[in-house]
Image (cartoon, rainbow, N blue to C red; front, side, top):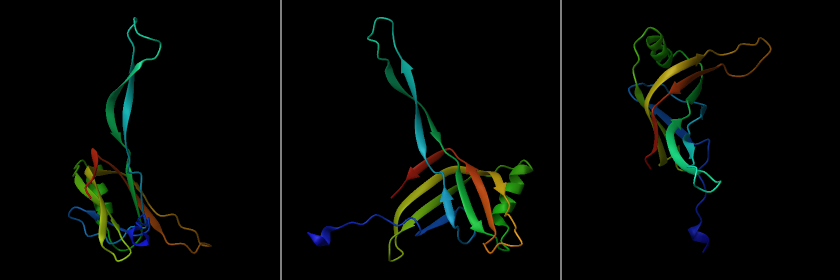
Length: 144
């Protein structure tokens, strides 16, 4: 039936919440993934194909990019980390439907900033100045 159609969510309709910070919007969120290492194991009396066992779980770093404004909250967070005070936070990425309702949520657990990239400037350019912050973390959960 035509009324049962479910369209996928759009990748440009989302919002990001960083625990305790008021940073407004982000124009790009990348890198959130998880993978399991594979350990190959074979005993001498088995066939020539090794067994494959699960190893360590690894999480890719998350990168948030935003247009430069007067807000200094995210920069101040990495500055504190560079001075030796590592504060871990939960970052939540929320996909929105066409009406702006929350429809899918991912939580990045125990995140802390590990790399800051200042904007590039070009006297002949017309683009927005973009800052980026890369986060290491210890877990990724899809909660909705």
